[in-house]
Length: 122
Image: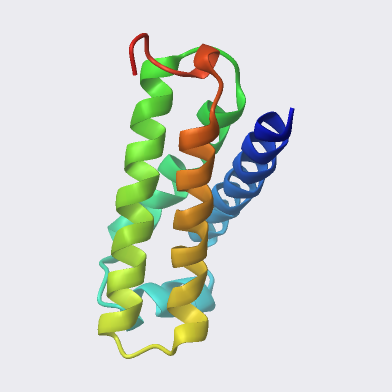
């Protein structure tokens, strides 16, 4: 039971954080300047603004174990690069610690997921 609570708690927090990437699509000055500050091109903002919320949905819905693996992998890559980009840009720990924390929560979600949400034999 505790494992199930940990899984759903970390998965929901992760999914909410991913869904917030919809704000990337607004083109607001804050979002655009944030991408510029870390050296990311603006077309990546659009890609991530679509891919991250899609990953959130995949992580929450039942079934689709292979798609879930892709969602976990893509999110891992995105948040790992966010940590590296913010650190390289000279942002303080208060900035790059958020994607690092989310990365840890994602790992907990991945390793505590029930067998029905795994690829057979994984």
